[in-house]
Amino acid sequence: MSMPDFQPTRAAGLNRLNQFQPEMALSYARSRNTDFGPGRRPNVSCLSPWIRHRLISEQEVVSTALKAHSFDQAEKFIQEVCWRTYFKGWLEQRPQVWTAYCADRDAALETLESHEAMLAEYNAAIEGRTGIEGFDDWAKELVSTGYLHNHARMWFASIWIFTLRLPWELGADFFLRHLIDGDAASNTLSWRWVAGLHTKGKTYLARRSNIETYTDGRFGPTGLASEAHPIKGYENPARQSLRAGESVPTEPFILLLTEDDLTPEQLLPETARVEGVLGIASPTSRSPRRIGDAALRFATISVADTTQRVADHFGVSGETVEEPGQLAAVAKELAGDKRVRTIAMPYMPIGWTKDALSPHLNDLRKNGYRIAQIRRPWDDAFWPHARAGYFRLKKTIPENLRSLGLPV
Image 1 (cartoon, one colour):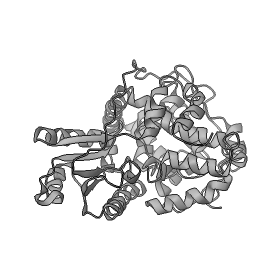
Image 2 (cartoon, rainbow, N blue to C red):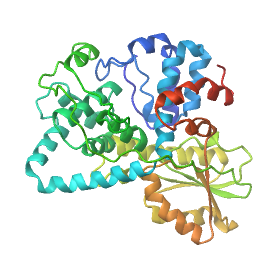
Image 3 (cartoon, rainbow, N blue to C red):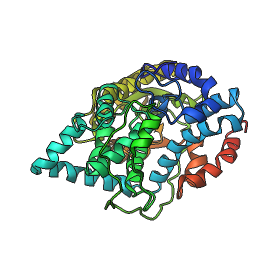
C-alpha cells in the first residue's frame, strides 16, 4: 500500500480509511514511527488531511478501527487519533496561546526584513539549502507534497529551533503555509512542545542515531545540536471555561460551511430545515505570507466539493464565496423570498478561520441574523478532559468512546 493520492473529497478519504482498516492494529503500533520516505508509507494511515478538514470524522475513523479490531489491538492507533482532539480541546480553553503565536510570528517576519543574516538562514532552511542531511529533503518534500511523516515533523522542528536557532514561530508558519493537514492547534502546540513551551522544560532534541534508525538508514545528519537551549516564549495561561455549542435550529436556516468541518450531514437530522448551503474557505488567512499550492488547493476544493455534495443531499442550492464580506449578500440570495434570518454552521474552533469570519458574523448578528454554531458530541466528550497534559485525556478514552456508543 503506497502513499495515497490526497484528493480533497470525502469519497477519497473514505476510500483511504477502508484501505488502511486492516493495518490499524498491532502492525501500526510496531512500525508507525518509521518514515520510509515519500511513496513508501504503508505503515501509517496518511488520513490526517481528511480528518483535519473533517471530510471524515474522528468518530468514523475510530469506529472503522473497532469494526475490524478489538480496542486493545487498535489502542495505539486510537490514541494517535485522539492527540489531535487533545490539542484542539487544549487550545480551545487557552485561546491566548494562538493569539500570542500570531503576534510573535508577525514580529519575527518583520524582523526578517531588517536582519540580513537571519533572512539568509531562513531562506536556506525553507528552500532546503542548509546542507543538513534529511532536513533539506523534508523542506523540499513539504513544499512539493504538502505532507510530512509525523516523526519527520518533529525532527525538522527540533533542528530548526536548536541547530539552526531560528525563531520557532517562523518554522510553525512555514509548516502552516504548506501542510494540507495544517491545523492551528496541532501545529502551534506541537512546535511549542518541541521548544519546551507546551510542557514546561520538556524539549525534543533530534539526534542522528534516532533519525538513522527511524528513516530506515536513509539519513544520518551530522552537526546537530547536542543540547536544547532554553527558548523564551509565551507561557501557558490559566484555563478558561469551554464555550457551549448550540442546538440545530428548528426554524429554516442557511447552512454555512468552512474548511474546519466538512461532514455536516453527521450533525444535522434529515428533517433539518436547510434552505441553502454556503461555503467559504479561508486558507489565505493562515499567514501573512503566500500559502503553498497543495494546501491552498486542498482547502479550496474540499469546501467547494462539500458545498455541492451537501446541497444535493438536502435538495437545495449551494454556493461558495471567496471573501467573508460576501456572506450576507449570498445568504440572502440563497434564502430567496423566504426571509431566512438564521445561519447555522459546525462549531468554529480557535484558529484562522474563526479569526477571519468572526467580525463578519458579528455584523450579521447586528443586522438581525441568528448564528448557531453546532458542536460535535465527540468534542463535547473529549475537550473537557484536555485540561493539562495528553495523558490525562488518554485515560478517559474508553469511557468517552462508550459514551458515544462505540464498542469498547
